[in-house]
Length: 190
Length: 190
DNA sequence: AGCGATGATGCCACCGAGTGCAATCACGTA
DNA sequence: TACGTGATTGCACTCGGTGGCATCATCGCT
Image (tube, rainbow over the protein chains, first blue to last red):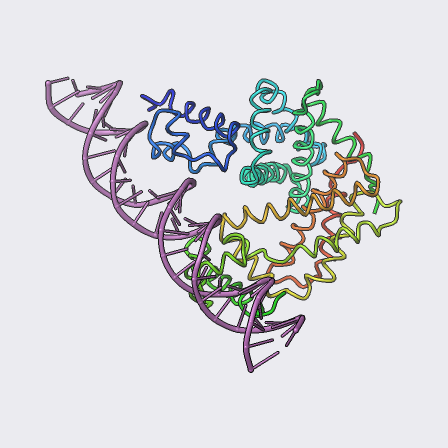
């Protein structure tokens, strides 16, 4: 497999991201993307399920890493800290390398409601994966779901700060700070 | 304003929900909806921005209630409890009346990925409103966002349980239980 | 009652996303 | 070289959504 492959996928992806950044997502047609990548419109849909997917392609493997890291946490760790630990681990391994690409992606997504909608789906499936990993550790269904969404919220708040122009701190550091702020603000007795 | 209105909006809405329930959201065309409601396809788009909106129409006023209730919480209440209190209040006032409609809506949404995607948008804007209300009370940006998403997660976990066939408990009760479970599962020392 | 403003509805043409199908092309292998 | 596989292409089609304009019912006013 992948006899020709090398090229087309990545060419379509960079052509799409460039055009989205230049003229916006809505104003860009799939025909334009295909033309700039030097191939047929139909071919685009052989590689990406729809126009939005080209932006989010290939981040499933991160979810595997996160879930594995959560399972690796010691049994005594509570669900929220376990989930956040999983997200911190992946931030170390992956995100720090793609700083520039991540900023471009953030800009493109921020400029398009349609893409923000799709990003919420990605967050949701990420939360589902995390909740499943937590349940494997013995957390009850409801508590696992809530802890997962909280951890995901912490992650994206931190990622936003990390994407700010002036920022010098690491993503893992910002995640830890955000978690601490949340716990500090809350009063944890009913 | 609303000289004729009565009829068309509600007729389109019930026609759409009925068809979605019968044949699924994707299989139903806007033309079918308009035909069953006895009007033109174009008229549908005069009342709803798109095919998905017909399912979620008119739930903005709940957000106002929630935000107001959060502002009403005493200053000493921590962000998470304040946000959850806001959601509990609205659950008392609104949801309990629409049990049957809510079940139908839940079934329709559960059967369609496209509608689930749109529901995530609604959750997101709800979280934004809650976070804004918390910031007004003096909570810092990051902590407010995380608390808001946590509260929303608690709300929807509870609403799912409330929608289960056999359930007898009130939504407000389930929300309180879910919050307690989450806090109980977590260890709140770094 | 007649009249004009307003807003709801209807009709038509158009664009672009996404799909199904069949033909074609490039490559590895026998 | 011939064959099979899988990537690519091209075409036609459906459907969601939009823009523009005509039409019609209602209201306020004279």
